[in-house]
Amino acid sequence: MSDLYQSFKVMEINNSQATMTSLEVVDLINKFRLEEGNKTEKRHSDLMRDIRNELELLEKAGILGERNFALVSYIDKQNQARPCYQMTKAGIMQMLNKESALVRYKTQQYIEALEKELNKPKQLSPMELLKLQYKALEEHEQKIDQVKRDLDDYIDNAPLFQVDCKEVQAEVKRKGTKVLGGYRSPAYLDNSLRGKVYADIQRELKRQFGVNRYEAIKRKDYEKALIIISNYEAPFKLQGDIELKNSQIGLELEKAGVTNE
Image (cartoon, one colour):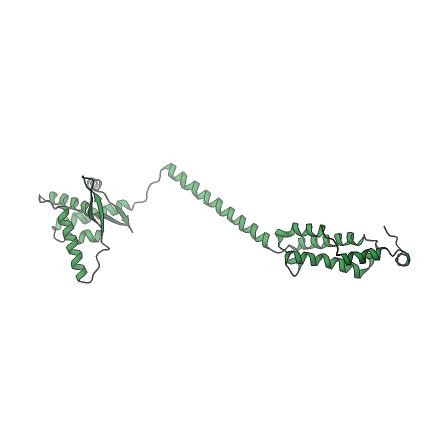
């Protein structure tokens, strides 16, 4: 059986099922005919005719037989394309109904052995195993990189962390205090004016990032938010109120008990 296995070519295997051409099936039939003492050779043209007749009869009966017989082609010795059929195991056994019991039996045994051989797990070479391991490692690293990218995207698009919000608040106060003229300035000591400056800086942040609360600024924009605060300039009207307030040195400073820086 092993010598016979090596004598024939299997065109392909689908769903654990060997598929042979009609040319190979004719060679197989003649091989087993000769083994039982029958020297009559079956020609490929005869098998092609039998298959066509079989398909016509099945079609008349409302049965489609194409699943077991696929019309393909091969190149003959004259380098010409010739038709042949690619046959499944069921198709092969279907066309052996006129053969002897011995030919049918040996053909079935041969195909089953062929299917078993073809479905054996492939033994990989050390180089093939190394390539598979490298590929698995590469895919693993790609997955890790993707997870990192996803995590970075999530963090970047998430709202500011609580610690970031506190830093933004502190920066608003630092900038507001500077705009007001310092901690000891009359403008800073004026709660109303001081609140207006802080509120205006916060409004600028909201306007720049299109949010209702500066806490909703995305974390990827955290550094931009600090730059905006650092570059803040009070509007003309508010700046005038600050300057006017800080110019009132007399009585208000005496009541406050401080001197202007």
